[in-house]
Image (cartoon, rainbow, N blue to C red; front, side):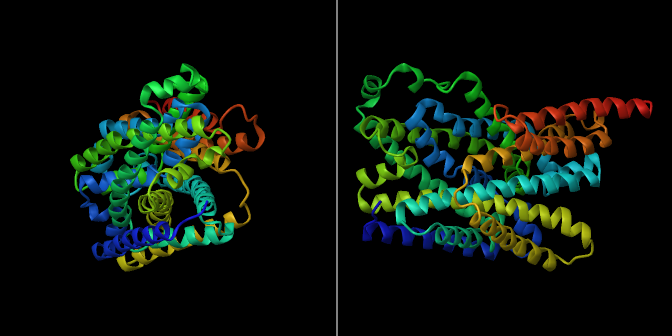
Length: 461
């Protein structure tokens, strides 16, 4: 792909504006609480921006167009599942989580299951999110090498430096403010490309003439089991990831947290429809291209250079924002659930410095890890990441919110430990036909239920 000078100028100006917002957010950060949860004074739009800014990345845009190129409407499950997850977060979890006063998911769990459970949850969740960070850096490398031709390691270095600049100054304020900016740009971009692809394709009648009803216009084009599992995985992933929980903890009150999550639920699904329109159009007109290039090629071929540059840099910021939000989640868990435990009398200034150093450290570790795995598959990292995150937090978190008096702390500790451990063992030793996520979730739920009954029986409950 060749970029014109106008493409490059638009890309540079937009990146400078996004970086400026990240630097501006530093003015709002004076304490560790400001960095981690915005001083618990974040408005609903910034809560929504944090969630959308992390959830809507390369998979929601480039990945959706790629999957639509291959299967059609079943590509909608990523953004549709994300929207459903945010709706559940708004309706059932945002209020209790925000009122708890916690800063992290593991910190919330430690109040029900004890400090050992919180430490285990921090370790496994951090590892799971770190694997997702690796996958996100790999996706950014793929985008940069495709549109600029730069060497993979140089692309990795650019990705890491921009991620650090995105989040290290303002913490959750950065992810929220830049996330809101990114959301506005992304909506403008995807509306333009979606409407253009729809019109170029001849509208609904044109697409129906070019494609058979199944699999192209079915939500289950890859099979009911496969596509329902994809949607379920998104729900589990969102409700089990520190970054999305952190956005809820940051709200100025429970109402702001609920409204922010509800806004994200409404905003996210339509983005997928635009990607589907592009994927189908490129399948009809250029069936021999690499599926992952469907959206970038459409942008370069059919949009004016200035607008094409804006859309391309928006896709880049979207991918960067997802990586930055994940890095912030890991750094917050490290500071709140590990460093604060090891150094209980640390000053607020020390906590803030530790959070920022953790951002740099986690991102640098991601660069080192990616450097030795430049040719690995992005989805392999994502699957293992989802297994670890979901098996660690999903069932214990729901039980802690809805039935805290009916679960045993001992059972919670065992579930938080054995769930992700079984997911890892299955990923290494088990058949590929069964996702490690489901193994980990099954073990976690079984241990939580059986353990609560057994331990309560022992103490006479």
